[in-house]
Image 1 (tube, helix red, strand yellow):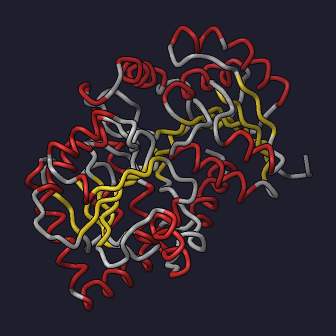
Image 2 (tube, rainbow, N blue to C red; image 1 turned 120 degrees about the horizontal axis):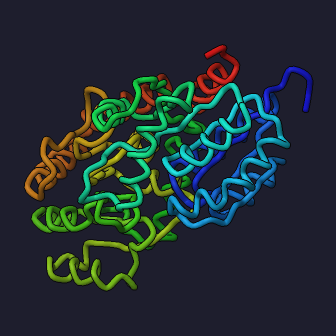
Length: 378
């Protein structure tokens, strides 16, 4: 380790294709010259393990299941890793990692322990029993383990205080690579060819894994009510494929098969953001939805449900659906299409969105905030 460099151990639930995992990778990639990073994944290497190794980051995997019992079975090994590494800071990411990482760091007498809160909505109907139990355990442990609880969502703070969390929250919004997520006619043309899209259509895009919380049912129902013949809906994310019988059946029953494209997971989301014209977020719950900032950075119009920090991210323009129901989604999409069809409005929103992301949600801004926290005396 270079002189004066901080050593940070990150404990994260997994390294799969998720928002928190992507933020962690970008954070390490941007700061690894001034900070020595070590990552411990409670489960496996996932998507980002290889990427982290490629930039010289040490990776440990505990290969545990996501249950409270499995976490504590893995505890001795994690304690050993932390004890040998002698970190200046232990930074944890998500509930299960907050528990096991916090306990292990406390046992090793690490002076700076920062939790990472990446979840907002604790409604029982859209969360697993394991997640709700983990959140309750974290609420109890928050009074004697972490120095601070880092959250990317302002909305998450009040929700977690309600379930008993200690109010020691530290807000750091997610940041993205603005150079990568910028408007590109070349990427748009390549993407349209690869995905076989009609460039004369207005492309509405939803980038979300197929999951009840993402509300694909409400999205398809609302989309089917739009009578505009010049629109196409692009569904991107795991489970959004022709193999998903439930989703395909839903699309067929709404008689929109010719107007919906299912393309599954895509590696280059910056290309997707250039392909679409309007981003639709139909979720029942979110924290900091990265897709909104990514779409804004490429100058796209946003139509979103009023969840998590969506309203705060988009600012004074774009479209927020006041209620999460099919009719409000329909009205929101109709308004978004009208904005797109008005060239002056479209250009105004494009300029506003690009400027807002540069000012508030850039990658350097996020990284500077984390480094300042790690170097602080708090």
